[in-house]
Each structure stands twice: as structure tokens, then as C-alpha cells.
Image 1: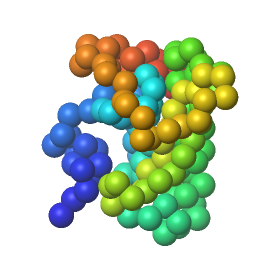
Image 2: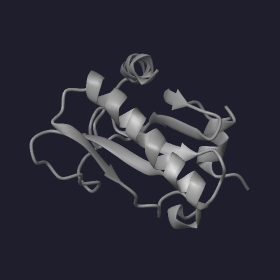
Image 3: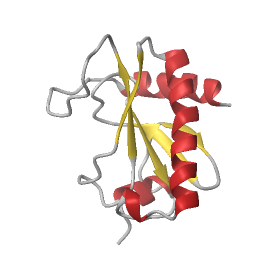
Image 4: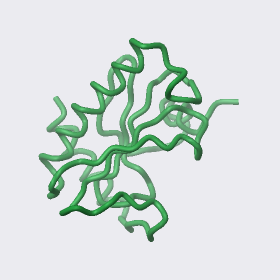
Length: 131
């Protein structure tokens, strides 16, 4: 059974993609902690981030860095926070979250509410800065 992230990559579930390469994929989280919250994943379905082969692991974080730099150009923030939790979906992934001041990434707080049009516009703006 494919993970929900593999189904997103395959176009079976819609998403607001912000970046893609031959090995990695980044899209806006549908329940963002902050506007611009993005998930970065390897296309290869591997559950645990530390089970990724070294080259894929390093590439994931280099790709995430490029995505973070694009988000930072679009979403007003002090910096981009990054976390790897990995329990909610059995597919390795990195959360990139715009931070304001010294705010902590708190996934237990109420999530941001965005309309689909806001997601689409935000994804397009980040995509434009990713290149």
C-alpha cells in the first residue's frame, strides 16, 4: 500500500507543489503550523529518515535547503525552522516552517486556515523563487 505522500507524488491526491526534482518533492502542508509550512520528501518511499541511504539523505537536506530559501523570499519570517518528526506518515519527510521572532514550531497548537486559492497562490510564488 502506497503512503499518502507516494499517492501525492503520483498525482492520485492533489497538492500544492512548490518544488520537484527527479528524486525529491516539496508541497504545502494542508494543515500548516504557519503559512508557508512545507513538507519535503524523497520520491522513494522509505519510512524512517535515518534508513535513507547516505546520498539520498544528503540530497534530501540539500533540496530542503533550496526550498527553505525560496519560502523565505515569499513568506515574511525571521528564518525557516526545520524538523523531522516522522511518526504521522510512514514516508520520510522534513517539515519547513516559517518562524517569526523566537517562536517555537509547536505542532500541538491550532493550525492556520487557508483557502485553496491562498494555497495555490502561495505555492506558485514559492515555485517561482525555487528555480
